[in-house]
Length: 466
Image (tube, rainbow, N blue to C red):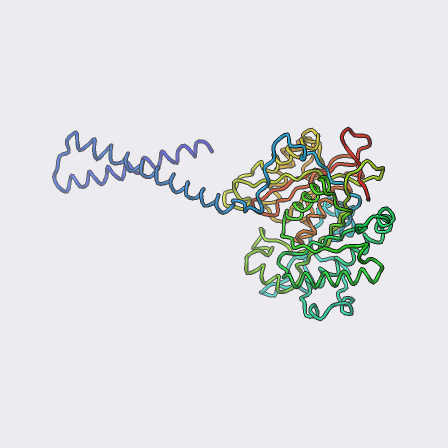
């Protein structure tokens, strides 16, 4: 490889000298001119050297222009830029208690089932109904037994003509919200019986591609469905937020981490996300954008769907026990997009993981497994395996990494919250740290550490339901 890289510029220089010499010798012969020493030095030495120097300068200028364009294309917006924090900032040690976590995705209806599917390298199958523009079946990760027909009686008029993916998003959210409330709402209401605030705030993350009117309609529908079962205001507050794909849901969790550890501590919160991309219109849009996964487009994405929920509370010296603790999120951008031509594996994720472990008071290599939104795209798989090999050299990369995106496809914020749910489940089972990583975007990278609850740890507290 080194010999080839050395011979290539030498061959080019020889070609330039040879071309100039041949041209000048032929010209001198045609004009019967006998070159003197000045002619030889000027035309046979200075001219080819000048051409080579000009080519080198031109090549450097083109490369610099490309780097400027790439930097401008991948530069984070103000909303994406991580807030600067000093290394000794005490807020970096803040933890967010997770009281409970649940998920309902294509590969399983619980965090434990999702972890098992990822460990077994489960992959999505061809969908029996969905077809691409050529009539061929597409790979899709569908949640089984989602009954949208049961929604008809409760749907408002504005939602009667919604596409199947939006109806499935509602059904998934309703199912998981009811499951979480049935198990956890009564203890919360008993613990906050005398408090003037709601016993629980349900924050529902819906895709940003939905319109404001659609999100308001969805909010009214879910409020009515829950109220019919006894979960209504003022004891249950319902808030709906628009959320982008990728790490946006993890950013929201980090905001809640700061809020729960700040002066104005909110009450217990159920963070819920749901999304679905299983409809013909979405497939056509993805196919037109060259985003749909297939044999001719291995770097495309698989449509998926699902819902995930996390029950959160503020730290307090009271004796209630959390399932796990989520530490502060670390965010950065790769210098070069992972799907760029002639890409090189970057250590951005490894550096973020090192910072996340350090601020959690852990040693390098302490967090295993790695739970990622890694999907079927080869660029993401290579990047995640590179991280596992570099950060956890004592572990088998295939066993240390749980790629949740492979079996569950693209389902937005639901997959991001499912990462935390699975990591919390594993931390509680093994009593060992786990790490979550998001590299859905071509450049944006996010890492956080999840640790099991530790009794009597110095400077730590347990969650409060109040």
